[in-house]
Every structure is written in C-alpha cells, then in structure tokens.
Image (cartoon, rainbow, N blue to C red):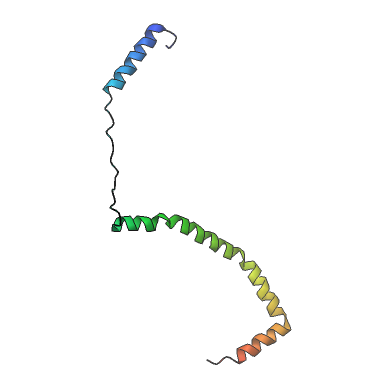
Length: 97
C-alpha cells in the first residue's frame, strides 16, 4: 500500500482530513485550585510527606524485627548465667507492689 503512489497519496489525504476534523484540545485548568494558607493547602502540605514517613517507619519496624533473634539469644544467655539469675532474683525481691 505504501509503495503504490496513488494509495499512499490517498492515505495521506485521509490522514490530513482526520487531523482537520479532530476537535482541538481546550486548555485545561487545574482540577483543584488551593488558596495560600487555606485549610486545603495546609492539609495537602501535611499529607504530602505521608508516604515517605510511612516508608521510614516500615523500614524501622523491619530493622527492629531483624534484631529480635539477637535479643532472644541475649536473654537466653542471661538466663543460663547463674550470676545473672541471682541478680534478677535479688532485684525482684526488692520490688514492692
């Protein structure tokens, strides 16, 4: 089709006619215009960093969970140590409820 000059010219004419008939795209206005210092602007400013804060807190929680086995081993070693057991029992005997 593109190698035939007549069909190619017909295709170009058709494309030009479509381009002329297509409606022009109107210039769009912003969906939401916020006034400076308005409640909406303040909310947007507060919410804009929400995703970053959530990601940081999730990473911190992951780090804390990764440290749990280390904490557990430390507790086990402390419970296996007779001197540490005596210190815990002595300290717990001094507590007054």
